Amino acid sequence: MFGLTALELARIQFGFTVSFHIIFPAITIGLASYLAVLEAMWLLRKDETYRELYFFWSKVFAVNFAMGVVSGLVMAYQFGTNWSYFSSFAGGVTGPLLAYEVLTAFFLEAGFLGVMLFGWNKVGPGLHFFATVMVAVGTLISATWILASNSWMQTPQGFEIINGRVVPVDWLKVIFNPSFPYRLVHMTLAAYLATALFVAASGAWHLMKGHRTPAIRTMFSMALWMLLFTAPLQILAGDQHGLNTLEHQPAKIAAMEGHWERTPGEAVPLILFGWPDLAAETTRWAVEVPHLGSLILTHSWDGQIPALKDFPPEDRPNSTVIFWTFRIMVGLGMLMLALGALGLLQRLRGKLHDSVLLQRFALVMGPSGLIAILAGWITTEMGRQPYVVYGVMRTADAVSNHSALALSTTLVLFIIMYFFVFGIGVTYMLKLVGKGPGHGGPAEPERADPAADTGRNQRPSRPLSAAPGAVLSIGHGE
Image (tube, rainbow, N blue to C red; front, top):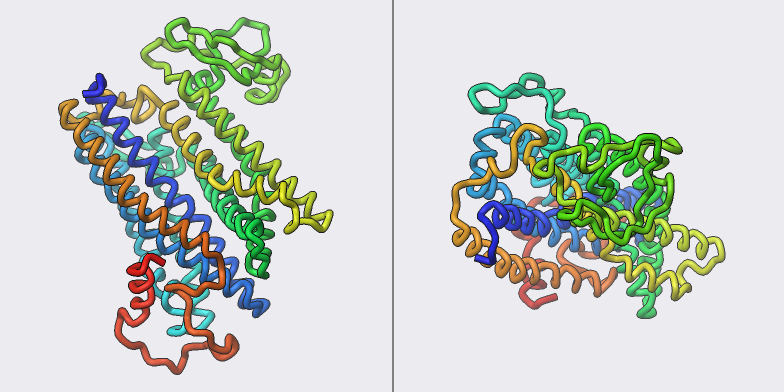
């Protein structure tokens, strides 16, 4: 069906489910840390603005967290259903790493999530802040284990192959493989950037609607500060990640650059735009900047990098795709930097909350962080092809023995169900964001005197006593 092979359909199916899933953990990571900062600011300053923002974004966090958990379960099953040979071959490494993620991160998040969302009047402020911090730490630990597993598949080490299966011999080398630190930093900063852009877009929307409450102004300002400092760090981290990839996955870099052949003694130009033609083995309509490729990739004026023709055709990634996904990611990163700089300029001019240009720019850039994450993920994963474990196991050897018809049918069902279920969830989450801070909600307690809000003399009631508000609000579509 669709004229595609079973292998291609299995890859598309996994890519589709991962693409849906990855956006939710990214926002979860960023919002969890943002909530911890908001509560810390409230505890330090006793400014109700931060408390109001905490309640507002905790509702969005709760919905996003739930969708992330549900979408992640499907991927775990696909390892066994669609990629059983991979699971059999590399399960000795990937299985324990995913188990560590559940035992250390997911249980930590789940254990403190209830206190964070519904415990404001049930525990003291110090314990509630501790719960918020633990949820934030749990999201970062979760990212650590998942990226350790993925990075090992990109740059495997610390293992032996015994009787046709991977056997870990040095767990420190498995976890701290050559690309792991760069991927962890890059992905964490990407999550913070995506969240900052999401928050900034929300603030811009309300400012454009004439809503200029202290909460709106504060979250818009905080988001632009975060963007200003994080975007340059991400560019630096991306540069270091690229150098690491050049060392360990040179074919991926050659495909990203559309670089087909090298001439001894000649510098590598940077191809800004073009169309890599796999059949003709050339990049058509290339717009080049002389020497810039050498400067970026080797930090020298005439440095050389491997070219695609240095590798057999069957070992080359699809340059046509990742050439453009990489440029989408980098281009959006430059726009993020520009938005942060414009925010600083308007701040210095005293027009941070009055600039229509800044507000429109921030609103348009709202989804750009998530788009950049998806583009970066496609670049990373398709750039690893034709291997599922780089240099060790080919993707064609990892797929289960399913028919193209079975995979086509399940792919269609996945698309229908995902757009239905998660479409409803995303719509509800955006509806919450559209209301803005100050409208109450499922996580907000009754307004009490903050100084007396210790909860020490309160007796716990029924386990679901905090939930009816959430149930009623969802039931009424609020």
